[in-house]
Length: 116
Ligand code: DGP
Image (tube, rainbow, N blue to C red; front, side, top):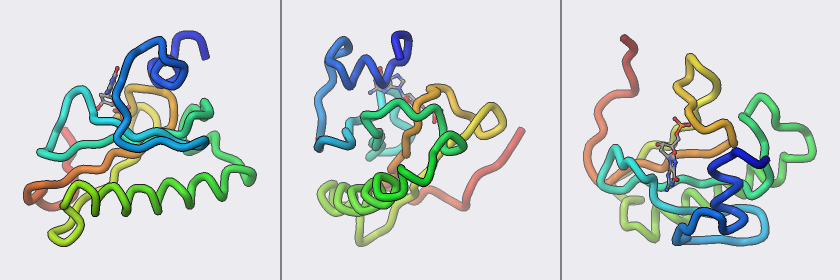
């Protein structure tokens, strides 16, 4: 997708250092961290949001979860715990319309989320 930020990160148009990458996904730090550790786990394929995921993405979605757990261990936040967030659509607070998961941790994050 020509005007998608995460596609530009994937194709190198936006230079970003990856903490982890493979043929299916890339992991990098969020540009606007909301916790001491704030990583984004992003499939290379442009999938607009979770609602656009299909049966063929089943293995990819499972792989993402396992890499999230691996990244949490790598960042040293696994034992104390962390939060994984996936925003979908306007009410979900999604800003970048390319499926991604947030891994947040490194401090007590409180209880879930609020709305205003
Ligand atoms: P969401 O609201 O779930 O769509 O979160 C999008 C996140 O993407 C937001 O926390 C900021 C992050 N982000 C946006 N542009 C860039 C970028 O160019 N580089 C990095 N590393 N993160 C970005």
